[in-house]
Length: 356
Image 1 (cartoon, rainbow, N blue to C red):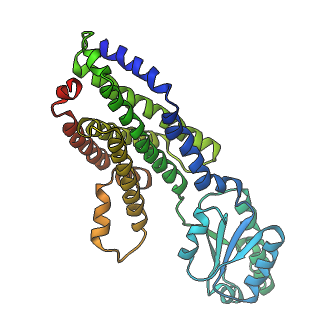
Image 2: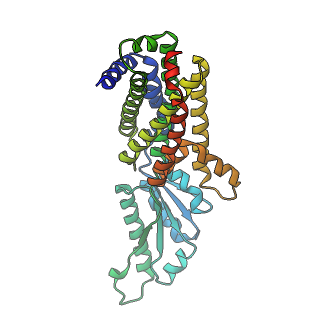
Image 3: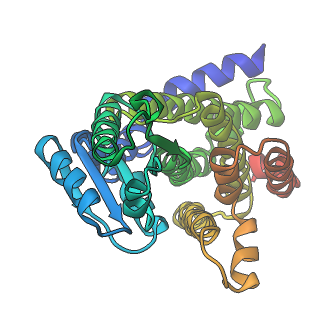
């Protein structure tokens, strides 16, 4: 009961600190507005891309019809080169007319038009109907007598996987600012120690474990709660799609466990407030850099193994695996082990820390 009572007291004290509110809630929202917020304003509805590998008169006629109702962008190269435009919502959908498109129609064969998108909607349905109608019309002009027009059908193949890039970046940024916000809590705990507040609290009959336990437990609770609120608000305000709240909350809890363990180690071994806070900030910066780089490098080949392997030491790299790859078991084990290492280091001779 003493632990719960002291934890509540510390929660009330921490909530009076505007710095933590700014670092954990307000600043992430401002940064995320610049990263994913702009995409929510610039809707891709009505914007389609055309990759015309046939370069024939039939595909050109269809593109002209599409241009009446849509903002059509002509693409070049491979379809893979245009995936970023889909992920960034610059284009709603991409249609590909292959090199056999015109010859198939001339031969009375129904061509296949592939479509690539990250979401489905009325805009794509209307475009697909328009393409189908145009193909039917072209085939009817070349159709043999007696062939039923009911057998004519354009096939639209959707084979581009949905992207959760915005959700990934949102979770990673929230976890990053959680780590940076840990510097505020580190500074607060060392200040309490330097002002002999912890030592005087022991005189009230509370054990050193209860006192420090309440400090770190209150840090864990407040950061988890504020980060979860930030995640929920970000999803709603910035209209983030393809999100998974359970995965997001799990990532926040695991990241906070690491952060609390880092705070424990920093406050135990670094006596200077400035140095301890700076150490937590540097840890957060390195974790963010290695975590994001590790995730980006997965999309490329011929990357040196040492660079890829280096990213596994970052907690945020494992957080990314939960969000982007749906891995659960392995990241949990790794992050718990990381937390245990820092927790053990920070717990060494903890009684001496309170009485120093």
